[in-house]
Amino acid sequence: MLNFLKFYQLKEGFDNVLDFLLNPEHRNKTFSELMKEFEASGGQFVGSGRYGQVYSHPNWNYVLKTFVSDSHYLKFVRFAYRNPHPSFPKFYGNAQRIIPFFRRTKYMSTMYVIRIEKLFPVNNKAMMTEMLDHEWQIPQYFKAVEEGIHEKEYEREQFSFVNGYSTIKYQVFKKILDMFKKYPQTKSLYEAIYLVSKNLKDSALDMHHQNIMQRGNGELVLTDPLWDGGNTYDDARNALNFEIGYEGEEDPENVIGGKLPKKPRIKKQKPYKPNNEIPF
Image 1 (cartoon, helix red, strand yellow):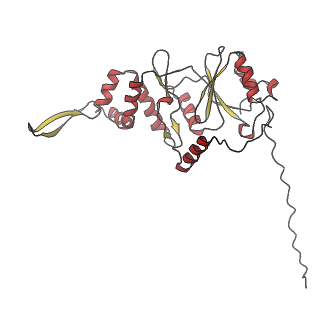
Image 2: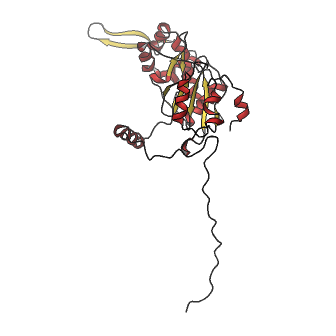
Image 3: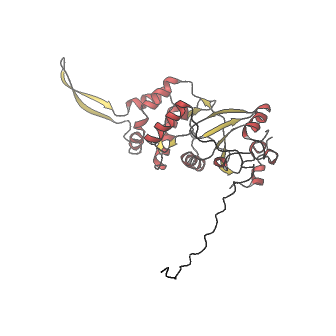
């Protein structure tokens, strides 16, 4: 659990992350009330993914991501923080679990916060499409790199009605190599994807346009590449709920900021005493 005083040293002003989520003066405000004040000070909600939400403020040189529970993203953050790579996001400190200071539901009793460099959407759609089309070949390509055969030319016979049989030369990874020449920044991103797939095997890769962003200088960055692989029945139920606008049973916002929900008192059972009297 995050040490409150240690986090207070991150001061930059709502103005600072602390004023947003760890200010004791907000303990009885709901999150919607807190957001109104945050937005009035210049802050904004940037967007959300499957589990996390992202916020920015003019006084921050980073964005703030919060999430209640996402073991796969947490695994990626901790790996990327320990193993920096040009195509991993720059994290300002590791993910920290906090008890937020605003009135909330039991589900949001605690949450994780992580400060991340500011990144931008990738506008080159053609590059993104080409890059994701060859993503399935990444493990084989880097295994070939390790063996020094990724540029090797092979020979094979091909038949045509005009020339009959002839021998042609080909490269297994020609399309990837051509892409690296055309879009040099894709090579670093492929390396990052390979490192994640090689070292975090308990999670499934989740590669799509929204999980790749870029820096101002055009470097590509892998932002949230893992998930649990999904469940067919859960996915169908979630899709139906989204279609009809069902958000589940409403949980009251009755957990005071800075506190954990009270645990229900469990009445102790009296020890059983056998009755040895014979009823007849």
